[in-house]
Length: 139
Image (cartoon, rainbow, N blue to C red; front, side, top):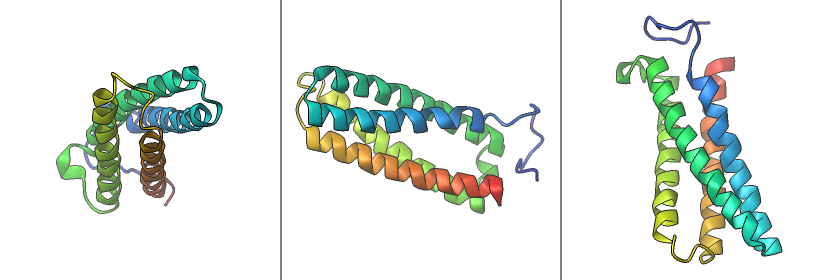
């Protein structure tokens, strides 16, 4: 089945290559935040922050690749539009979290519950967007 809505200049789609990196980094961040809260070791917090920023960078790459693979805004329709809206929700959540991380850079050890809540919400949104993306591939 060809999911491309335009003549794709490459033989492969780019989005699937990039999309699994933010999923992995965001889940790793959640695990590290839980470890930081339970074990109270600063290394977990620092590594969770690094994981967050790697996830954010790969999320931007995955979104750009998805837009390219769809052939631009005109290719965002039907089931792709549902996935796009879910991915846009992920972007909004993680951009708000990026602003939060930046604003809290002076006292990064504060607001543990807010960081955990943001990571849980973000991962839930990622899971839903991934579910919709999987439907595009396997249906």
